[in-house]
Amino acid sequence: MKSANYFVSELEDRTSGLKSGNKIVFFLSIGCIVVSVIGLIPVVNIVNKTKQKYLEVFLDLDNSNIRKLSVKCEKYMNMV
Image (tube, rainbow, N blue to C red):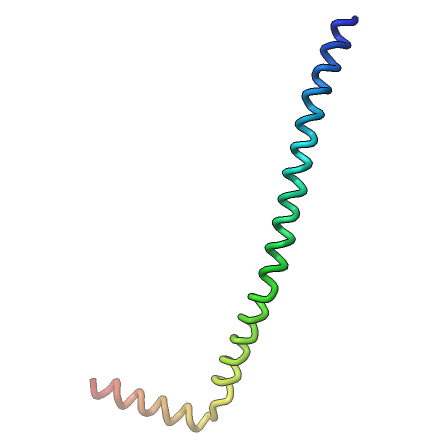
């Protein structure tokens, strides 16, 4: 029975080292994810602002101007 207890205590000693290593890796990965998300937030905001500017520019065109441009394009395509 003593040998079984020694075996169990040896296994517990081995796994306690692995548990602490796993915890370190786990918390480091969570930290990396948090830092990445915090770093991506400004980039996403800049992209959204740029997208909004482009949409405002293209949605501000009048229908008459669009028709004129389409007629010019059709004439050009017919000439080619």
